[in-house]
Length: 229
Length: 123
Image (tube, rainbow over all chains, first blue to last red; front, side, top):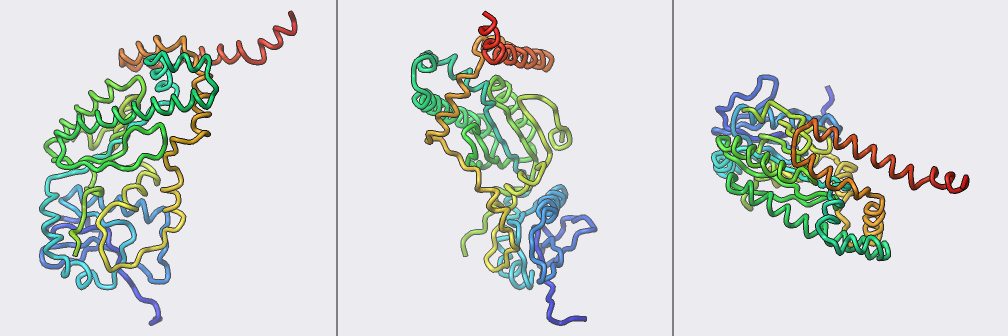
């Protein structure tokens, strides 16, 4: 046995101690809380593809059994009780209770380029005029401006349609000029069907230009925050 | 729960019970989730870069030129047909409209591309 290698503990998530966590996962239980963990070798602290996928998968599996606080990827502790479960006990308990019965769903909406450009030209004759006569940069700038205005209005419509069903909303930064909305809604499980119906109606109404992607129900990745200590 | 277990193949709304693929997972777990003070971060160099490399760039001349180019290659005569097919919302109609659009695009580029040059030559 070597003595210069220490075993550390990777933490996926925290749940109530009474949650029936799947048997193949390790747990550290302390005062009504359970941290879902795995041992890691201090010499090998690298993130591989499978580590990332596993983190999300473990959080999801625990979430299917009860309320869960997913940690950000990469949390490794020497002493899970001394560094996390004991000092943060009251806050973790409070947070867990606040997420009981809730789930996150993520929503993404993106324009299909040709379809949205067609719609812009059809709706604004000035753009069609620029297309015939203006230099490309001027045409492109007008298109970009019209697209931005349309995107702002459509993003607002998405939030407006889903907000009444949600406890909270988190809007993520967009990645490309064709994206309309990227974000997450915190939903009571009892309202998931209503959200699905609202999103379906919205997506159908925007089907000519926009494709929607809807993922969930998920652990509340976007919404877990420890109060500053 | 229907939405947890069933994906549908609808064109306008894609449903998934959990994130599919590494990019979606990375987005959820790398800068989201509970952050605790005293911990070691595993090395994620490279992955964090992937998540920030594609930021929205609206106000650039390159973007303007790309939009102008895209607009100019659109076949605008198809606008109405496509709109109607989308409104009907049934998959059959959509597939047909898509096929028609692609056919029209081919005809469009063929008619204005090499073939018209060679036709002119023959004249």
